Length: 563
Image (cartoon, rainbow, N blue to C red):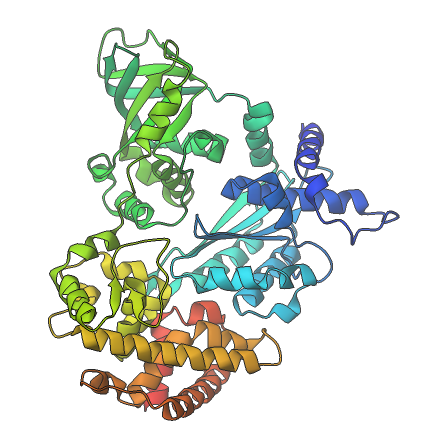
């Protein structure tokens, strides 16, 4: 069956992506031409499957070719806040697994990418440098590493160990804790074939589901409701992936506070998941109810024809992805579910259900900050001085010389605090500040002792450091390499140390605060030199992108410099 499956995969992915690919570097007489094209199509499919982007977007993500450094595709989705990094291997025989050496090359390429060593990559990667820097610079970007191949075997222990070691290093937050910033997905022949088969010709999805403690609504349209096992949901995700959400307006939003909270519940209190979760809504062309169980309301099996999840994409995807880490935790998890049959409904009813179920705006923890009395006080104080402090999330807001938002204020106050843990948290995942608005790290920087004037002064000081760093970046011979990585990834620690050494925290609390730009420039330059020495001495092989998000390592750097 392997050869048959490989042939079917080949036909499908070339039809999807070949015409969109850049093949200019593959000669007509190249003996490996067909394999190279298939490898690129496979890489595009990994992005297409992982992100739900268009076929042309997936094809444009491909960077395979000479000097690709083990990476065959790179794609960043601002809406998902996810960067997808792919290695693809086409195995015509349909047997075996990727070689350990190729896995090692992939891991090293990822390290070089996070270290911003762009001179180690080809021109295709160089063209994506701005996009990559944008992704790495965002506060809450998550990264998905995808290994896709047409082999039919699992990874050998040595290869898996390389992947596990890389994930451990990249997710190490220090203090013996791990944050899931980076995840790994293996798509082998079986998963590729099943996902393609599920989506072939936009074929409808038919699901067999079991509802416990179920009920029925008979009019005006038939609907069923009850609780469904999370294990069933994870099986849907494994088989159909994002195809489950083709009619869902939002699709999967990637890493969000809500998703992280769901994962935390699944990990620490799976029995409470039903109480904390809004559930899912499924529409389908028609429903068949099994005779098993008779009239009992305890449990009933249903067959859903043409099923689509129109609300609850985050719930389904989070459960599906969680199953790859600890499937046993799903055994006790139940999820509320509604199933709506469109069999006797009007043509527009399904669209109306989808639109109505997705109309509510998603609430994040940071949205509650706008109701915090301390924040309202700070904003009011600043308004008197003609400074706008934006507390509400808005895609249209843009900082100016007389305005800033909550994220900028949080990062500035963290750096001005002189505390390494607060500074690193602002770099690693700023959303953590807003998980508890009554204590913890949030109250360390937003409390009654903080005046509006102090917040604005800290923002201005931080902007001054960023301006100095931008100038130093522009003066580098190339936007690549270790020093470039230090200036990009180490910006928060550099800011914190510079403000701390100049005593700007105390000065910013006083009226008439001004910044001596020359003095600050000299201090920033000194801090950068000292950090370079420390990095060369203690972390010569470390990834810049993860080092400055590690509490323990940053604390060591700061202590050495301050002492």
